[in-house]
Image (cartoon, rainbow, N blue to C red; front, top):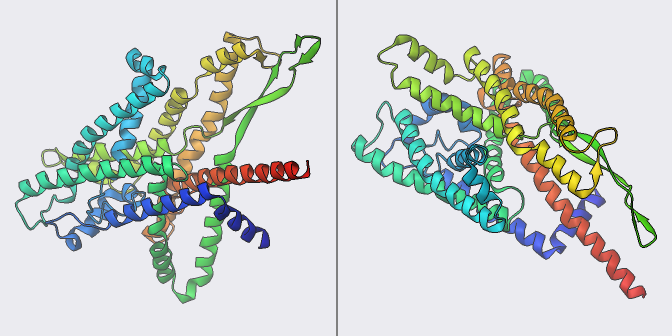
Length: 430
């Protein structure tokens, strides 16, 4: 306990770190305020219950803003979609690849294009959201006027969320986008725990404690899964310079078991949500389309979970392929004078690294899919709906990933402080 208090004290002794933490808290409070401000001209009480059923998992990792019909309802999802599209274009479009090679100037151009694309996607997603959320009316003004005004408000809210995410990344602590998602998820955790405790009652309190223990074990498993790496050994060739031999040391290339992070789950959620919306446009003409659309809106249905797992596995491979380039790594190793023991430099190294990625990506993708569909099985096992969504899945993975990334940044600041203290003591002794 004394060590914990010492760490907390050290955190606030570092001026830059304490300032970043205060900035992060301020930006997160702004986000939560916007998440509870409802759109003007809508009856939230009538629409909230049906919206929760329709939006399901997507609503859970946006902190309930979809079911609250708030000004931040679409949140950071347009920005995420724009980032994914830009990553795809960087592979298929040579012009984007050329911009990426321009260094800092290229990064600013890519960021500007992403922002413009975010506006376009935000308008489309706002219309899509309003079409589903207000399908049965429940608006106090003309529906056409309401949708027009609300699209402007929701698009502005999405851009403000994008700005908050960028500010947290630049002036705060952790990744801004995942931090905004995490705070939305955490905000609904106390009510979910309370509802589960009420659902079990005093006679089943032992069962409730057992559920918390299982949840703790799932969190530990997720932490191990997130941190797991496959270390590929590399050797630097020995070089002779002015009668001094240097180099020859062995290092490692760490390949994460889950290189794609939470992006496959987020993308799969958005894809199923969009598919359900498109099928819903023709549900009045074809009865079977209405049934399929309804199943895609129910996260406990077999069709939802089958498609969800399939999209996650496919996109995990795809996202890993576009973020980790074995050919580029092999070229960088060759220029640096390093090699993998027993493997020839160049194309052979690229093929070896590609094989390593394939071997670790498959079990990682399957485990990610299993974690994502766990809430459906938890709900079918008798857990309350709000609590079951924390029993694995998107919510828990985003929370664990965001917290680990934030803790790693805090640890790096603390490590720098320890080095500074050691250097200052050495200087005083001299």
